[in-house]
Image 1: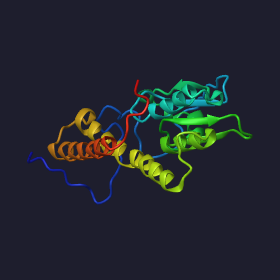
Image 2: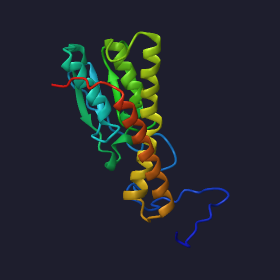
Image 3: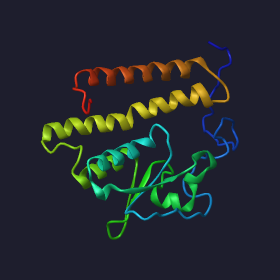
Length: 203
């Protein structure tokens, strides 16, 4: 371990441009940084996302719905370049006040329904199209448990690992070891669960 220790201040103060790959867009307050309307395509469902591990979840869900022949699941996908700060545009903040991808607008309702947070979008689509969510209480509860697990456990730990391992301007062993250990444990949780399940869709 390094002898360079950091003593946190009793009251933290934000210093703009405090290092790291995303220092130019990160800030400790919410709300838009600039005015920019979101694009709207021809289908009722409008997805605003990016091909990050979290961002692709909704795309996979929509594609699986379409594979089942559910026409109402047709959608338009719009890229939100988070490295350029588009998630802080006025249009995107109206859809997701937390400025995180993915976000969805459903224009088939009156008024149009916004849905943000990946788990909420997956649940919304499952209920809207009556697909991929069991109706029997015990199975539904088990399904929702795993839905919330993939929202609250794996992404937070994986994001922390990625940040300290790849993006942090200074590398420290403790946070890298801590997040790596927890990510591996979460993946082991998933592996053990999947090992007990049949392989669906095998050709």
